[in-house]
Structures are given as structure tokens and as C-alpha cells.
Length: 200
Image 1 (cartoon, one colour):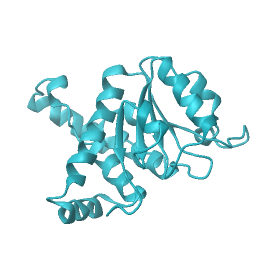
Image 2: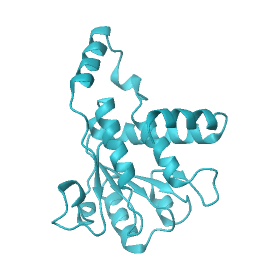
Image 3: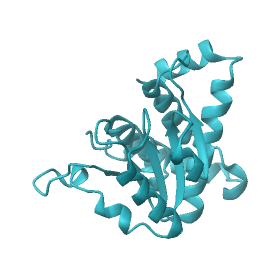
């Protein structure tokens, strides 16, 4: 979904709770990775890998000048022969530490093996965010939850588009301080001359 479609979707959703909820969740995500600077880990379930969200966050990280938003996609069946950005396995969750952010995207109930790893990451100090049904053990251990229950007006994929687009917006101006006009021009020049982000 491109920026034009996201804008149209936002127009359609004006007046609903979805815009505020997705912006709040995205602000928490961005605030966590920017303030802690420890990196973003993104994991799904064995049946559902959020690679599409990973690709959008990589784009938003490049376009917004917030490299911390570019996630490490953690996969259940990663193999050493996979390309580097797809070869990170669940063992990476065991190495999660304070300052890192773990975003778990699950369309349904999360299985015990993944829950155990998420719990260990939280105990080690990682910030845990959950995007999914909003009920069960995973939301209970998450620091921030964006529930997308079955039967919602929006499906999980659409909500991920809204979250990734909002995460790329400058929602934390107070932390960065006022920027001078020259700084903004310099930033724009950097964005226009930078190579395009790598596609997945």
C-alpha cells in the first residue's frame, strides 16, 4: 500500500478510533526505538511472518531519517542459506536486552514456545509491543498492545500499513527540539540524494 492509498484510507477512517489507536501505537514504537536506540526486533508466528511490515518499516526508516525503525525480522524457520535480512532465527530473541524493542505480530493465539522467548526478552529488559487479537497471554505481558480482534472493521494487514506509515511520521518533535530552517533543508537534501531503500 503506497502513501496515496494510506492517505485515502485515513480519510475513510476519519472519525473512527482506528486513526488514534494506530498513531498512538506507532508513536510508542517510534518513541521506544528512538529513545532507547537498541534496535527493533520483529517476529510473527510460524504460520504468519510479518515480512511485509518489515519491508514497510525499512522504507519508513529511510524516508523519515530514523534508522532505528528498520527492524530485524526474526523468523521461525530461518536458514543460514537465506539472504542475510531473512536469516535471523529465534535464537536472536534469547539475546534481546534492555534498550531493545520487540514487536510481536500474531493474528491469533501465540504458541507457548514463542511466549516463553518473549517472556525471557521482557525479563532481560526489552520493551514488548503486541499487534494482534488483544487477548491471551501475549497481550498480558506486552508493554503496549494494539488489538485487532477477529471481526474488526480492519484486518491485521491493513492495520500494519497504518502503523508503519504513522511510525515514519515525526511524532516526537518535543524530544528532538526545534529544528532550524537550514537543518530542515539539509535533511531534505539528504533524503533526495540518498539511494532508494533496499527492497525485500
